[in-house]
Amino acid sequence: MEMGTIVSWEKKEGDKLNEGDLLAEIETDKATMGFETPEEGYLAKILVPAGAKDVPLGKLLCIIVSNEADIAAFKDFVDSGEAVKPVAAKPSAPPPPSAAPVPSAPPVSPPQPIPSVSALSPGSGASRIFASPLARSLARDKGIDLSGVQGSGPGGRIRAQDLEGAVPSAPAGMPSAAPSQFIDIPMTNIRQVIARRLLQSKQTIPHYYLSVDVKMDRILRLRAQLNDMLQKDGVKLSVNDFIVKAAALACKKVPEVNSSWMDTFIRQFNSVDVSVAVSTDAGLITPIIFRADAKGLSTISSDTKTLASKAREGKLRPEEFQGGTFTISNLGMFGIKNFSAVINPPQSCILAVGNTESTLIPDETSEKGFRAAKMMSVTLSCDHRVVDGAVGAQWLAHFKKLLEQPELMLL
Image (cartoon, rainbow, N blue to C red):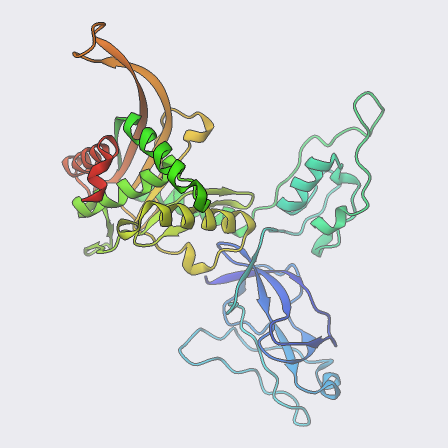
């Protein structure tokens, strides 16, 4: 993180602050996160207003004083200093007037992030509606026309709480106002980062793609058996849990796939940390199943469900989505048969997983000469600088073997 956007201030100048109070919402390049009050005191002065974009790391945001009587000393305070570059030591605040105590100056980088789903940007214009993703979702569910809602956020942006008491739009058949010709959706920091990183990936990484069909009959039977056994414990394994486990074990067999291009060298990782692509209202995010190669299916299932839920609620901590050595993107639940995914740099590979469907395949043991089988198509995208074609093919062969003979995962 180098820049941030002040989405909103949750406290006003003069308010009493307790340690841990939500002070402001700051949008970083990955999420909109709550900024907690670092210590008790009073909010004497807000130096960076809500809606300010591209606030540099280390910029003085506000003044907090210990005593309420000292608030007046900072009424006309103006920060004329440059943003302090992050160093090992904590940056100190600018010197206040001689009669006032030294204020605490929280940096722009939030030490205890509390992610929020909303991601807003200021705007104006009669035909342009600016609202948070959560507000848009609630408006759709309740049938509320956002053009008639007064926003309370910076620049008139509509928040979820602004929809309280809003009247749903007239039902079909009744006269209503003509709809806008278009809606301009503000670019969140997350969407900008996705665009920048994936464009960079396609422009700088020499992608190639390998596809294979996997027989899923034995995995599906094993999954049903295990779920019957685990039902009393409230555990339900998904097909994706087996895919994560098989991919992690295949990475241990073919470690070249579990590597990153570092310009002057290739870094090969000992641990397999699998990033799982999760779609959220704010954009795509990839929480990580750490050491997936060493975890059991039940633990992988629990971790995946917890991380996916936190991702959709905007509550992931940075360490839960930063890093990863291999990525899986599964669109099978949408009926997608196959697709090719864009590599998530600096990783060297990503596995695109399609749906499982019944297919007729040759069978010499059958009187008909064929039988029905459950088949799943997967495509491995590889960075040719790190993974040669033969190496990628070896990885897919191991992955396919583990799913078609799941007992091998026990070895």
